[in-house]
Length: 284
Ligand code: GUN
Image (tube, rainbow, N blue to C red; front, top):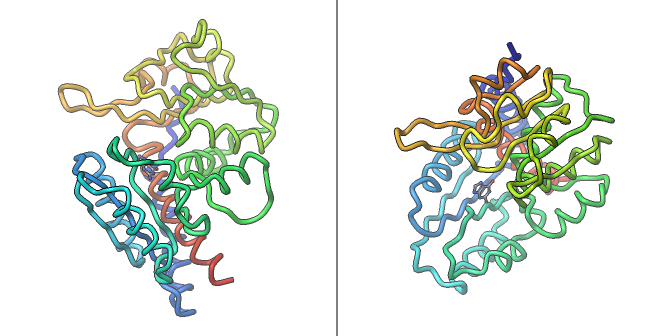
């Protein structure tokens, strides 16, 4: 049976450390501040932005949650972002994805001050990550959380074969860059990959971020592999499952993240960490 990678327990540790850092910053007169903007009333996005705010408050941060109607125009959203860009009490800006179709997502991401880009989506920050620039800059929070988990559980990265299923800009691509920067050999695959199971079976570390419930079964996993499940899928009966068939894969894998309680809590813990990073960097 695989060792369980306990994202909830690790997130607690990370959050405790973040709280201490916030207390130190407050002693210096800086209260880290995060602002989230949600356009429209997608229920899942409302839950996400609310839970981010709740966590920020519980750690002692300032948190502003702007809920804009689905009819918000590009000009109105631009104004909201610019307002936050120029607000010195806000160190981190998160515009919840996906935006309604009539809004130009790329233009909004490009508008966020790169020094307040807590998602690490701005092309300047993406470029630094891809070029393995040394120094301080934000990176996407889900990949950051995954890297924290791998480090905490002493999973070797250098020279290891990593296969990522999924090619998203939010998760897979920045994770690929972070892993390449640690000298892993990383293959990005997707639903259209020829003989996907043949590829995934080669992975020492298998990361699945495809958004397909129970896509990966035991026969697609190398015995002893570390399996990271990024999927969060709600089935018709309301249960939440990942992209990995946990029950069968846990018998083959060396380590595995559960869903829920794996990557999810680490993403939000990383978001909080990164908000404090941005506040510290701006105070330097
Ligand atoms: N929607 C789902 N995940 C994310 C995230 O990490 N950042 C933003 N901005 N939107 C999201």
